[in-house]
Image (cartoon, rainbow, N blue to C red; front, side, top):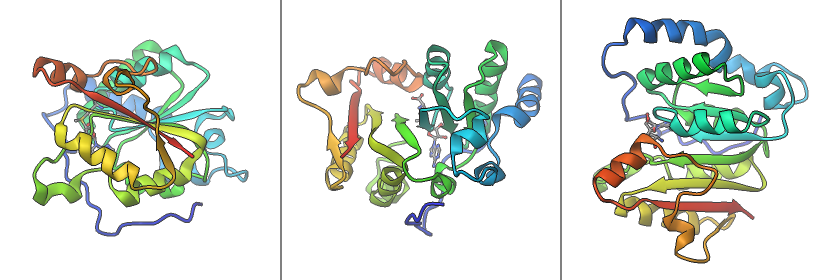
Length: 235
Ligand SMILES: C[S@@+](CC[C@H](N)C(=O)[O-])C[C@H]1O[C@@H](n2cnc3c(N)ncnc32)[C@H](O)[C@@H]1O
C-alpha cells in the first residue's frame, strides 16, 4: 500500500441519492454488484500488488481512472473504443451508478469497474505508479469562497494522485466555470511534479481526441459557456 497523505477533514458534500430508483435501476444495481462493483478486499487479493490483476483478472498494461463519471458518457464510450484498457470509474451518486451499469450490461462491456463512493477513500490503496491516466471531467465547482474546501481538486488530493500515476502519466480535467479554471491552474501549477501540456490556445479550448462529450459538457454549451480542457503530465 502507498504511503499517502490523508486529510482527515475531507468530507463528501455531494449527493449520494437522487430520485427514487426505478425497478429496472434496482435490478441493474443488483445484477452489476458482483462483476462491476469494486469492494475493498479487491485491493488485497493478490501478492504481486497489481491492481489490474486483482480487479480485472488479467494483468492489463494500462489503467485509466475516471473520477466523477456522472452519466458515464465518457467512461462507457472510452471502454467500448479501447477494449484492451482497464477503466476504473468512481462516483458516489447511486442513480448514475445504476444508469452506467445498465449500459455496461446491455453492451456487455467488461473492461470497467466501478467504485460507488468517494474516490478519496481508495486512492491510498492503489499501488504507486499503477494508473496511466486520470480524467476529472466537470468537477463540481463549489463557487462560493466559503465552500472552497469542498472542491475535489486540492493540493493534498493532487499530490495523492501524483503518487499513483505512472511516470509521464497524465491528468485531464474539464470545466466551464471561470473560477474553477483559475483554481485548477493555480493548484496544479503550484505542484512541482506536474507540467501543463499547453502550447497554443487550441490545446485548452478543444476537447481532447481521447475524451467523449458528457452531459455537463452539453450543459455548458447550452449556457454558452466555453469549457476549458487542462492536461497535466507527471514529470
Ligand atoms: C458536475 S458532475 C460531472 C459529471 C460528468 N463527469 C459529466 O461531465 O457529465 C460531478 C460528478 O462528480 C461526482 N463526485 C463529486 N465528488 C466526488 C468524489 N469525491 N469522488 C468521486 N466522484 C465525485 C459527483 O457525484 C458528480 O456525479
